[in-house]
Picture 1 (tube, helix red, strand yellow):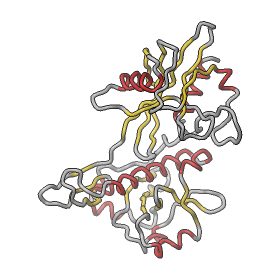
Picture 2 (spheres, rainbow, N blue to C red):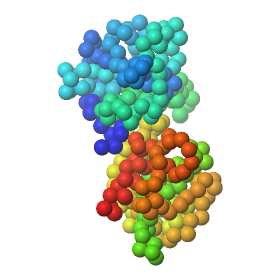
Picture 3 (cartoon, rainbow, N blue to C red):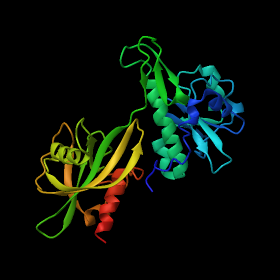
Picture 4 (tube, helix red, strand yellow):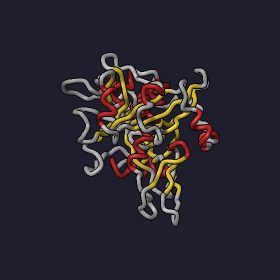
Length: 309
């Protein structure tokens, strides 16, 4: 199963709108997921995710806590996210004595997927609140409502409700059988990535565009390759900061690559044998490397490799 795709909490979409019900969930059974500057809270030494009790956080302002959901498989335990980014440092010092804030993507590979999915949800929704503090219609400050799943403009004349948005992005493994009878896939890389790393092509969906059209457009724009027979494979939440990755496989109608340097640094065709010689993201030294193991890009690459078995 793809990383970040197993968030099994009951989000209680109807109940969480009731202030009395929501307040009752802030009880001794609740667990609190801390965030700071888009980083999750882990124990020092063993990098275990820390879920705190109400007692550990009750000295903080809990008004802006975000209700994540209830774990119905564990004593109906409520989970809340609390962003400490703008909290007075003196109030948060105690947490740094027992843990540290780390980028989730650095540790997700070794985390239980349910934990990784829960932490990713906390990261994504806390980022949304930090970056949507003002009404997009009138510019007035907004406030957290509905347990953190909406923001309300504080202007009585406006009163606009806004909700967390997820940006759809397509990501695709493109394949073609060449004249030598060998099937190859199209991978590209951005200049900002570690040396040698290649990944599947990807891009955001434009307004008024179907997913299949977005796949064809992005591949054409980035590599000059035209495609057809676009087929959906799977999806992955990617709240880094706010996307849903929609995975596809497509057949190439051409093979001459023309890289748009504004989009990619390089793009190439690779056979399955070529990929067998690739290293891993994070490996030291020269040579080609595969994309991160927690990404849908890696999933699509492995999906294509298995088609050749």
